Amino acid sequence: MADEGTQQERPQHMPNSLVPGVKHVIAVSSGKGGVGKSTVAANLACALALTGAKVGLLDADLYGPNIPMMMGPTKGPEQRDGKIIPAESYGVKLISMAFLVPEETPLIWRGPMVHQYLQAFFRDVEWGELDYLLIDLPPGTGDVQLSLSQMVPLAGAVTVTTPQEVALHDVRKGMAMFQKVNVPLLGIIENMSYFVCAHCGERTEIFSHGGGERAAEKLGVPFLGRIPIDPAIREGGDSGHPIVVTDPTSPQAAAFRHIAQQLIDQLEDGTQRGSSIDSLLKKIKQPLTGH
Image (tube, helix red, strand yellow):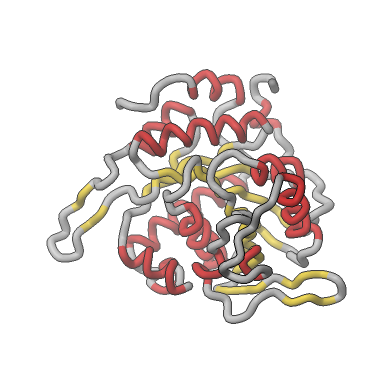
């Protein structure tokens, strides 16, 4: 196990032979499925692009790729001079297994095949110069997460959760996995945090309240923000029009932009404010309930 302070000492611009033109590689993760991780990844990518940054989004959820549907590119990737030119939508470069296999075809792969295709998404794709490359991971702590940590130097990982305790339980395991492979934790995002009635304005905490923030506080990592549960966010994902670009002045879009700015502030000033490995693992053993 690494010693105290390892996270803060991690080099911020390690040489990367697979994606040499990419400044920051960010993993977007979740401990379990159904928390809206891909929706968050798509909107964060768009929010970063709206700042003028050069952004890519790699759909590493090989078994259940959804990013092309959520981003709605008008055409898929192309092949040129032995390299794959990514698709593009809303200023974000995209690659996904969904571009390469028929929609109804299941992938039945063991770990080595997963590793091979994930490596190809870095090595064989012409990403060019990027400020941020977001990686939409599958839920959990499986082969893709381990392979990714071995392939490229990650600037850090963002974890998406919902407020209820069952989701937060899996967050702890996911965060411990990243820490064990020396990946900094950029923070926790609480998705589906609350619902505001469009007619009466009443706010309802459907999935409890404040769990993501309490988890971040107890584990000593940044709490990046809350995203409401809202039909407009779901509709944007289903139609390929993320709410950040279709309704940029909405409170929902503002929540994504706020989180994107926090990531920019962390990465561009060269600091990650999460816990060291030893201190985090001690805290993970503690319950996350309560104030």
